[in-house]
Length: 164
Image 1 (tube, rainbow, N blue to C red):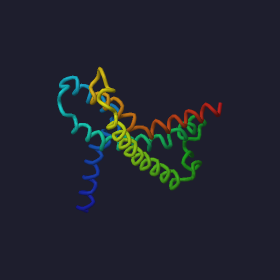
Image 2: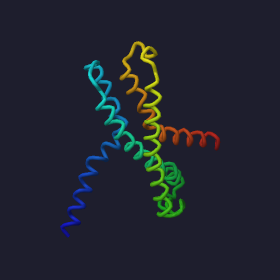
Image 3: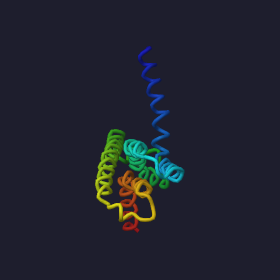
Image 4: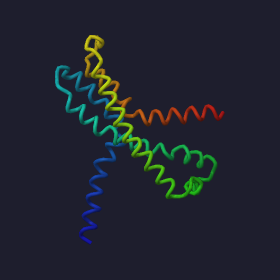
């Protein structure tokens, strides 16, 4: 019994810490702009590392939510919300699909971030005029981090337009 209580306590603490980070992840990407404005000559590599490793967790959360949002919304509008899971193939299929979306989004987000960092390292300093290089990197980085979610939403939006 003591082991179960300890496990549940650890899981609760992890969820108390991680869930707000995942949900509020997109909003946290505005913090660097205040830091850069306050002290433009500072070293922001620690903050960049933090966003590099925590951003994909938020992306994975939004991929998980986006996985079934469309089907649940459609089922709610059609009045069959109580059976949407069975209509989607049952609990095993819907959970497996959500898990694949989540881990796919996590992996794809890391890949997009690495590609961004590699591509941005080749941008010459002379090409960035008028703004600091860090400011520009932090401005573009969220698009790399959340690229899987953005692409999923764009694909669904395009399918919706084709259907009408």
